[in-house]
Length: 99
Image (cartoon, rainbow, N blue to C red; front, side, top):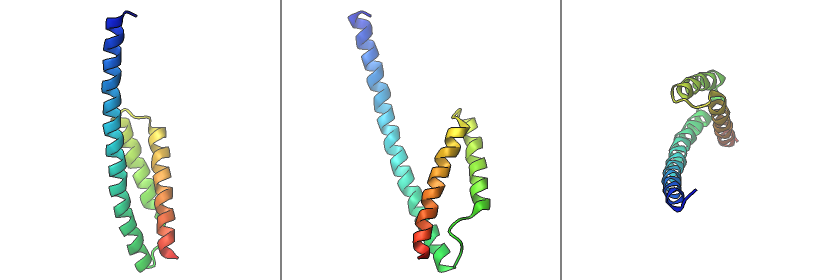
């Protein structure tokens, strides 16, 4: 590759990395906002003696996110794993409120 092509490739790479960095920040802040709401759900469940887990809602959410992943051209299996991870973290937080 010549210097001009290398320079163009470096610029494209930098642009992609800057976009990735912005998207990572969006993901972190979005997850933080989501967990604020799930913390409130956990408190409500604890106050009203509701179970920390809601399997019917979890199944519906997984189906909904799997469909969204397909629409977004994201691997649905990855989306399902990611959501399952988040759900397990939320349940752990809800169980802490129950104690």
